[in-house]
Length: 441
Ligand code: NAD
Image 1: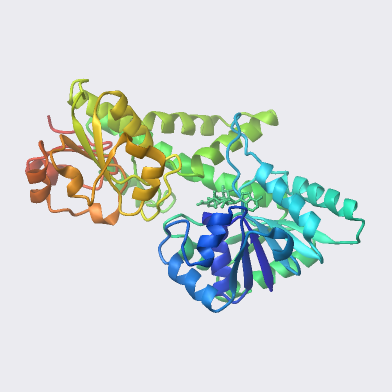
Image 2: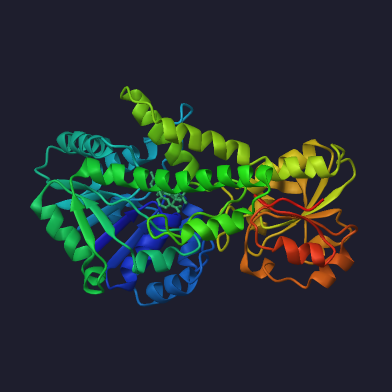
């Protein structure tokens, strides 16, 4: 099988690399010439555990290629995946301009039958627009070219993307012809053989499945954050409540951790886009509107605790921040809660010295000299008035608290991810604030 992946970002690069890993001949295409040049030289644009080694190996074995020229690279492809970004437009709906631009390029340059698969997260009805864009170009060429469209939403999690792609809970594929279904079955055959199910469905259902999945996950997070805030008011410990409800199989123990709000490039934009799609079609997504507003409030929860502790005066105070990426094991800072917290601290007259195991470069790109960058997690603590745990990287879980206390000006921790135990922290002499747990002072 010859595969073209158009858009070589988090999804495109992981998809291309993993399909090469199971034996396909893959070309990853991007309009970002520098990104492609770097990839050809073995330099990756993103951090994802295990990805670099896999890219290098598959490139060496000549199953994985990179190109900035869609015209030549999609020639003879059996399948073209569209994996470009679908950022929120001004009104919250998914902006399809990159997806449709790629569809037009495919129509312009394809030379044989192929299945054009949308992997980007797109609203119901997009496949129809993709089909129309390709058809328009083919008509201009006056050549008898045939193609099918399909929808294959991606469910990988940044930080565990390779594992998720190679061992998916399920592969969802929307098709409208048997020919496309056969070809997509061939593409994913190695995964099927390993017992990972493919769920074939119609295209609108596949498109909707992705939004429903992300919206459900965002709902779990906002629900738990709401419960955490109430726990704190009522003197209950949300960590206990979480264990109590998570042991019920109908609820499950995953994705019910309270924190400082969801971020990243997917949940915020996908929840917004689904609310917008519904509104455009005369329906109000009442639950999702609340999910969004709880999340907005939650991004301020840690800062509000800081304000209260310092009685509203952060002038001249230095805050050590552990973790900048929106979640562990990625360098992605799109919509990261750290950005909101940093802005608020700086606006209130405080200073920030931050450390993240892999997102320092990305942070420098986004924040410039707004903050100070630490060499390591302990360096960030020197003379800090308080420590803020913003991303739950494994290396932050069991630090040497004696060293932590010695380096800091004052032993205060604001733990936005509940990675420490309130009782232990208080017994070790720290002033500790978690989420949904009431400090004993
Ligand atoms: P990204 O921003 O990391 O990558 C998109 C890439 O597309 C960029 O490299 C960009 O240069 C390239 N591009 C844009 N226009 C192009 C064109 N005309 N031709 C060729 N390349 C072009 O985006 P991402 O995070 O990989 O997300 C891609 C899509 O997948 C989005 O719709 C997103 O919602 C969805 N998704 C993302 C994740 C995730 O965890 N990041 C998970 C599931 C689904």
